[in-house]
Image (tube, rainbow, N blue to C red; front, side):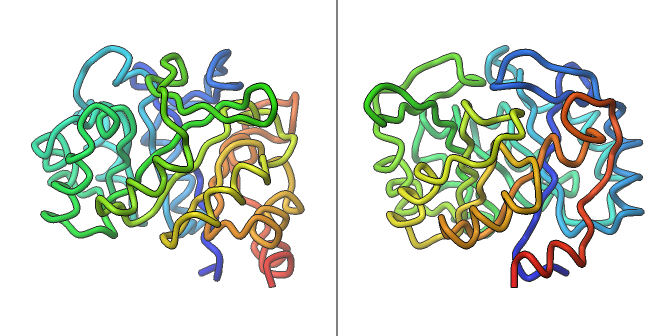
Length: 253
């Protein structure tokens, strides 16, 4: 197991896996259950699935697809998308998932974080925070797959989710997501400086050097990978994979 967690993040859309670019244009990646089998063989430490249309479509988690993935998976699983109540969270935990990621549901009802944490423990709650950059270095908080702008400061929201019981934060830069250009170090640093819970940096990874950079320079506790684990390289076809562990270990020493 790597000392710093490096977590594949897989995006669900209409029962298929896709990869998006800046939360917009997407490419088909494959079947969720088959992809889980590949990651079993690669012996990754943890997987996180995000249903990118559940909140926008105002629907609950697709339990059929989640059950198929959980039945195939040998490693800890996290899920986010359409979780708006403790009952939604329970249905996902009952299938076999270990963590729930909440985003739009927590913005609408911040006590949801506390309710899930009280029932299942803070370690089971990931607060997902999607951020878009603006003029003069200002960041805006977004929900509903980036479509809805929330008039709250993302750093202040990060502090609040910690206070409400979240065990970690999945911090996604919409501007960097799917670009292979590297993480938004300023954004990650602002959040890691403001909270004491682990921050998972997401959005922009294209090389192992980027992984090292966000951990060493912006103090991310963990790193989430999207394009790097589903494509051969930028501009090329689908290939489900995981970075060389020895190179990761050397980079993160």
